[in-house]
Length: 149
Image (cartoon, rainbow, N blue to C red; front, side, top):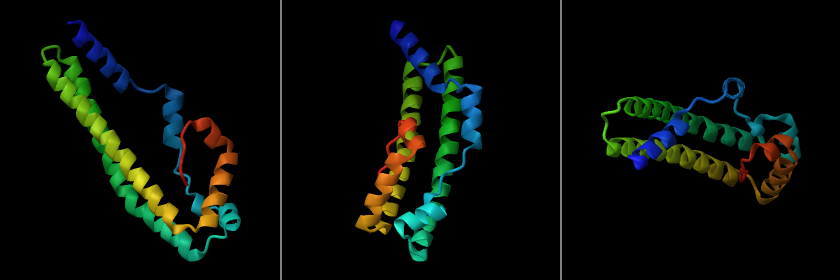
């Protein structure tokens, strides 16, 4: 019984909505396409071909990311329904949590592959310069996310 209660509480934490201000910020935030910035183009000496290749990689990845996010929301909604139904077997809840985590993993893998593909468009000097620029950006230092490119 205690284990089941632990799973339910853990699941509730996973599916709990974010604070309204955080949710609003997430909705207002647009992806930062650094390769489109005039500042970055100048700093990295990006060619028009490189900028186009980076944009192409991003645009090819975006539909899969969006579909995966929609799938994640559906799976999380299903988990919420399972939790609300007290007659549901614990193993069904665990299986649903596994589906959610698999979807999250898919999202992270897709993003990582996108970053690797972008990284390969840049030459060694550009990658080094970009890494230095990103390290100086205050939003990167405070976000807790590390990005290889």
